[in-house]
Length: 132
Image 1 (cartoon, rainbow, N blue to C red):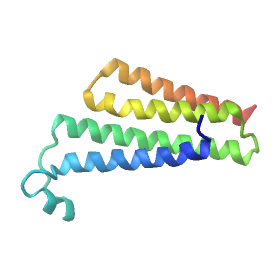
Image 2 (cartoon, rainbow, N blue to C red):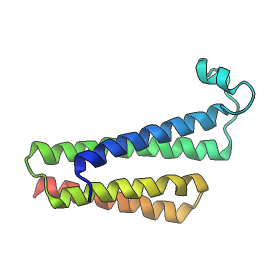
Image 3 (cartoon, rainbow, N blue to C red):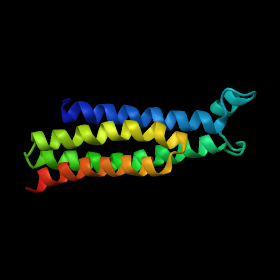
């Protein structure tokens, strides 16, 4: 099991990958004019494809969840309550978020939601470790 600080760094890197992926899909970087859009102000973007829309929503969801995850890990460490339970929760969070991303991109509705709920369980474990 990886340490919660390692998981925090990997979660930040995963978030960066998700945001960059969403941006690349949205600007259609591989199509003609895509690199110009990438380096420009992105004022006149083409309509997003369904995949680009899902990638953007998945990235935004990760950013929202990462904020809560960081707050919970900080609370555990500030309270001096780092534990195996908190580390387990962090690992559950990361691995479920890693599974969430391709599932969301593929448009698999119910499985995506179930995986998201697993990541919430990971955060709940961290919160419980911080409180008790």
